[in-house]
Image (cartoon, rainbow, N blue to C red; front, side, top):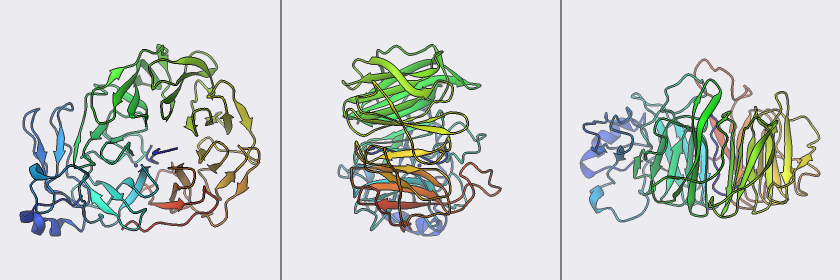
Amino acid sequence: MHGTVIGRRGRVVALSAGLFAIAGLLAACGGHPAHSASSASSTTTAPAVGSTTTSPVTTAPSSTTTTVPSPSTSSATLPPGPPPGGPVPSGFDPVSFTAISDSEYWLLGEAPCSNPVCTSIVRTTDGGAHFVGIPAPPAPLDTGSGNGPSDEVNTVRFADALDGYVYDSNGGSAFWATHDGGEHWSQPPLLSGQDLLAFGTGGGYAFALVGACASGACSNLSLRRSIVGSDAWSPLSVALPAGATPGAGLAVHGSNVWLSVSTSAPKQLLLASTSSGSSFATGTSPCLSQLGGALQAAGADVLWAVCPTGTLAGLWRSTDAGAQWQSLSTGSPLPNSALVAPASASDAVLAPVGEGQLSITTDGGTTWQPVPNTVTTGFWVWAGFTDSSTGSALSSASSAPPEWPWPNGPLPEQLWRTSNGGASWSGPVNIG
């Protein structure tokens, strides 16, 4: 699951010399002075503390850009590369993780601030020994309530050190991109009034399944592709159903792309490409059309899938790129929200998304064993691997389930890490 991200709410201090005094006053809540906006081609500039902003930019989505100058340097004279970053906002709560190596990763979240929007991003380049705050898009965080504004976000994904994306994995209409490591964020015209159903990166490309969704049904589906580093999105020539439910699955591993999408058939349609989407073969997904599921690639030939059934979930594995699937027994019932995180073709960690220890397999899912020294209170809400050894997981700090209607907002989450393929974990990581 190289560079993969999933948010539960479904996740910079760059100051010019004359702005340090203002920044000091704002640091306690991670706030920004209010953004200003004029014409559709305007550029918005604001000092940043952590990565919070005060209000969404109101310029046209195709040309909106958030700009943050760096310490003691004009942004026009910045050398190429990611922003240097600044303090992590106090009280930062992560909701989404993305990595490009075992040492360089980012977390999307929020921190308390007096002037929302409070969305923040932090970055580390030394495996979590030190973190810095970098600019975040001026979009509110999706809290999972289901009735928030359409511009909410809950997921961050970086394809490399410079090219990153922030969006809502719950089928929202917000999509932001950066091509300078987060120094600037813009809204490319990918969605144009449609919803984002699935997103993935690999092989130097970004892929997005979009459609117009309402009342639990989607139409006008289109699978689009852009070269990483560009915002030129083009539709791919692939036969998609006229209508579908929102529960689509997308997995990318190098030049291999798999898309699982609902049709009128009992099982989802599986589309597979070995050419970064230039052509597709058709097959059958193990997941039900009306309920969808999640695909995870562990190589060019090995796929894992968690498929809800309405009561419990089923775990499946394919060793021939999705042509055939084997149902796996985990030894205990799986909730519909269970997560599988493959470290390799044979090794994977299973998160029940409920109270209890993580489970691990080293024989392709034939047998599973509980992972010692992982939390047994709180809820696992995401897990993934950057390579066959290095993995990460997010756990809520409470025993209340992730989708619980909290009276005071979502519960804080904690980051856990493994360096031995999931056999043992350490955490929570100190991000502040």
